[in-house]
Length: 278
Ligand SMILES: Nc1ncnc2c1ncn2[C@@H]1O[C@H](COP(=O)(O)OP(=O)(O)OP(=O)(O)O)[C@@H](O)[C@H]1O
Ligand SMILES: O=P(O)(O)OC[C@H]1O[C@H](OP(=O)(O)OP(=O)(O)O)[C@H](O)[C@@H]1O
Ligand SMILES: [Mg+2]
Image (cartoon, rainbow, N blue to C red):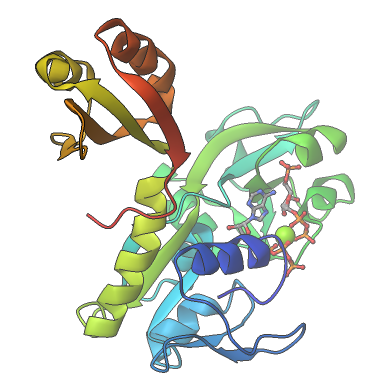
């Protein structure tokens, strides 16, 4: 997983939430054990991670799809979209310049940290342009006569705007992915890591509802509860009421509680769900 930069913290946090705790991690340590003796973490540059997995130095990897696409390793397979680090690779050019469409770049020069993705995009578009590889601050290059346009990452759009560049075309939508090699994707341990990380994603935006309800109102309560299979119903010792538990989308909690109260439910508790293993 990424050793620094914007992807490091959220990657570590996801692993922690998934219960795969790092046990001997420390700042600047590039190798760590986890609570599972069979799972060791290697911390590497986001751009190097696809190669580490492809070449067998690691069995699964966590990094941006943009990096996986740039690495062009055919033995890599995506297991999960981890839904953070969302950004876009775009072709951008000076706001007040001559390049308004991809075709306008024919015969011109593009600077990028992503030469392979850029080459593939230009080929698909039937555009012949010279690609100059840079390793950062790409947004400067059209203003110092190194390039006519760039292919670079944007998320908020601030960097493009501050450097008077505007988007000419979208090249690739990216977010962080969990990926493996063709020959490791079915290993039991890889599956377990996939299940653990997937369970955190599955719980995102879900709430656990617990309530009491008179037994004769149970059918109406069940009708009100949306989503995921039937609710769990339990007897309450010494009472005619039953306890009902259900998983509900966060966006539906407000309406659902109002409807539950209307049909006779009481003592409704709403809690967060840490993980949901389906
Ligand atoms: N502005 C952004 N918004 C969202 N995701 C981004 C952004 N910039 C980069 N990313 C994602 O993070 C990945 C890593 O970016 P990068 O390698 O530039 O690391 P960094 O966070 O800039 O740290 P450093 O370059 O210092 O290692 C990119 O490949 C991309 O997937
Ligand atoms: O659309 P925005 O929100 O402005 O983000 C886009 C910027 O973010 C990244 O740079 P980063 O901050 O990672 O710096 P770097 O060049 O050192 O990698 C990317 O290379 C863009 O320059
Ligand atoms: Mg960066």
